[in-house]
Image (tube, rainbow, N blue to C red):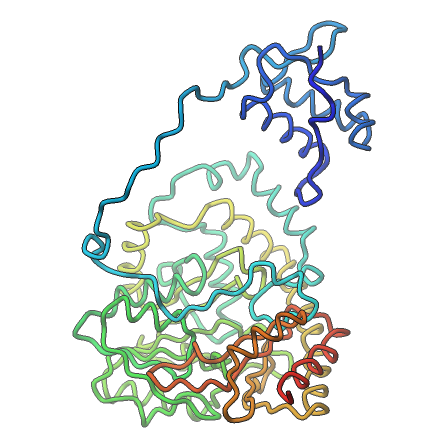
Length: 485
């Protein structure tokens, strides 16, 4: 007797092709022990009718499971669960035990409890997602990324896919960064001065671990990227916040005892301020005077659609004093987790050794896929498309903000993907965020970006990277109504 067809159903939230979903459904039934060796599967015709899909789809799924020895075919009798199919483990679940470890004493160092806020993973279901750093699927070139991924899976790239490269990176990706990406920022670097990282955040962590000790001082912008503050706190160095102004970090306010200065000159995080050329030169002079290094996080330079970006600090540096952090996660998609470090060979050598001890190297297949996506021109095409979309969204959002009387206190001179906003004095934007989410509006409260005990509670960030232009005005109206109440 065949397994009842009613036990099969397609999950509407499942990903992948229908064939893959049928395969997964049957395999899961076998692995869980619901379908046992020798039991007969419903005929392809019956199952197809029950699921409302093509019979050939079910047949192809059964054929694939047959090839993997999950199923076996018996003449004209149909498909059966194979005698060689995996058998679920046959043992009783372990009894619930009482944890008697005093973890408050056992944990030597704590990494939780930092300022990093938790953004909703289901942000895409909100109608008005003014959320920063997420991918708009309409702007991502999925078709060409998929083609590049398939190419990277080919026999020609077998070594880059499967080999352990120890502490090395994909030479194709490094070459593209050296010959194409960095020269656009005025930077000339050799391959041994470049290190691939798992995004900009990983690059900042590696840099902090290599450069800072408990006796050294790091100067950071205030407000700044909250994850950077957590990274520096975990490194146990002394952290000196320096209040930013409309042009970024004021060099004269950087303390004399500073060893490393962390800055985001192209698009200050989160105010979006752009550091003018004169101040960049002034910051380099200040670093020279106090013998400090500079870590330049250039996380969003590609989004300069209002004019040509200013020269990178690294391009103005003739002493090897600047360490440059770049990222493809913002411009391609955040889940890609690819960034890079550029610095003097002595620094990169140590960062490479540390990375090798922690994770060896970023996955070879991801690196090779990215190399193809970049070198074949798909990346530049996507950047042009994204810039055009962002320019229109920025125009619509700025007009709506002005019409509804909201206050902008920071906007990038050359573009970017967000506005830094200020609510009326006394407003709690954490509470405002919670109330707006109930109406389908996502904003980002500004409090986590500030250091110290007296964090202002009336700042917030509005991003236009993830919201369609035709929804922006209504979303801004809802924000204004919530503030007026």
